[in-house]
Length: 424
Ligand code: NAD
Image (cartoon, rainbow, N blue to C red; front, side, top):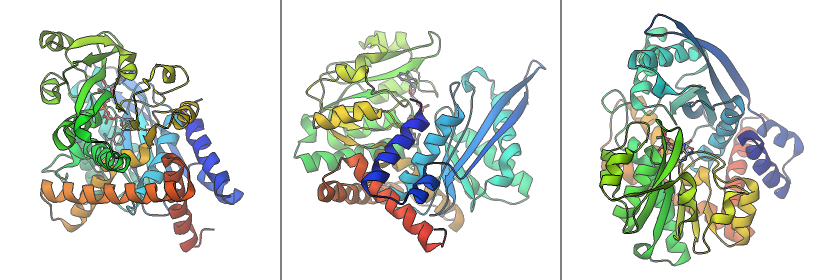
């Protein structure tokens, strides 16, 4: 099952649970618009490389489409469709006035030089600028893309339109229209929802341990936030190794030190194995993270990682899965987790911190007035706490899983907006 089939299956099961009108369901189970385009790049060696870019706009009833751009070699139209659809639900659950979209390029950006990356970013905008904009569709960074890339893209858009329009894209560097707190936002948002979950389950956070998959933007700040704000211990993280073309788990039973690991991690989230080994980290196979004897699992890398095969390896001790990544759990594995009474904080609630601060970035761009980091993170905490409470309330009232409850809150809000606008 690919990611889009998974996103549709999740949606279908809730649509039937709430008796959603079949015509409305048909609108929402497909993206409203899809663009696929060629991006020819002049390489530094003089050759021309042709890459393919995508932008998918799933729904814009609540506001302009919103969602990141992924540069990843296994990117397909279906992955982007799934991610665009999840963005619609994410913005609705976080209660921010935006719709859902996503974009990408099938490329390993680490294989490109700096100038080639800049040409790719500018080339992506050259092909799609007429179909995006601060009031139309607002991209942002995701896997394989960085604030610097957002800066180039924003600049290209401004050149083409002849106007300063920083709100066309979010996740820009601070000082070029970016918001303070955006880098930490998704990881910290994961931690805020975890804090609320532990409170609800009556578990003392200080006594908890976590295993994390990934060590990129989300995982790094989920790890440091979990330790700094909740006092818990992170036993391991994992990452992809660009030299070996395989992934590894880096563990320490006494607890990893995220700041040290960050200091030996490249901008793509790959940890230097030899330096980690020197510092006493155990380097284990990729899948080791999932079988750790911990209270909390935080998948924060790619989709489909908790599946029919890997679910067997999860320890009985695990009480919470906090989905930092988008779509990390397949529907089959989800049923097993539910049967085992594992509390799953569903992806589009758990990782909504990034898009929430992206929205704050757009608000600051519109005002041309910028907030302090503390102000931004306090507002983020408020939004995440309130989104968690509204999903938990539905989950308790309707006696459904947190994922179904999150879908119910999101679908209700999107359908209401469609009705208010007279689209139905
Ligand atoms: P990133 O590119 O910064 O990091 C990805 C990490 O995953 C890296 O450490 C990489 O080495 C690791 N990884 C890749 N393949 C792996 C594998 N097979 N096994 C183990 N580790 C592997 O990406 P990110 O921004 O941290 O995003 C991670 C996930 O969170 C994605 O699903 C993304 O869509 C989602 N997400 C990100 C944000 C955001 O603001 N960055 C917001 C919401 C959701």
